[in-house]
Length: 168
Image (cartoon, rainbow, N blue to C red):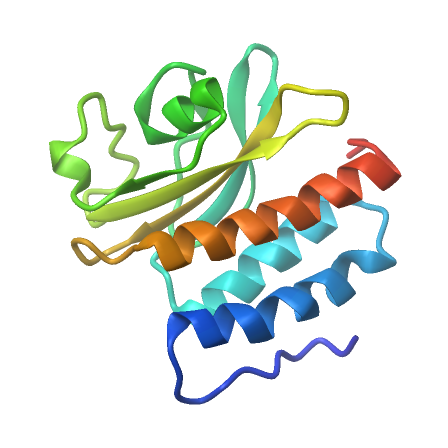
């Protein structure tokens, strides 16, 4: 795949996800390095949607540790049971937060973040490997469309982990 995305100029988020997901699959298909793949996925999502922040946290050393991302400086470590990322990790379920200020225990890595969606990434053999975290600087910016689309992206990472392992 070339290093350029081909996305609809106008269209719904559903249409953009439908165009983007196969391109992400192609982009990561032959690359064995996990960090490189996570970096390209974060860049592709940021380019496609213009989200405020897109990144990954991976389970390591008893915490979620910042991995590849696009956007402003972020929190480096998050406890498994803290914030939106910790909730998605500990429950193994995606979560949409329309207003981060109304989420009990929200971790404010940036005061500009207003809404958030986080999806877990399953680990090979069970459990949760990490999370895909997306923030917006607008209130109520995410819907079930984003949860579904980002879950499909997480599934691409899961498939890659199952094939190539989690070596970084």
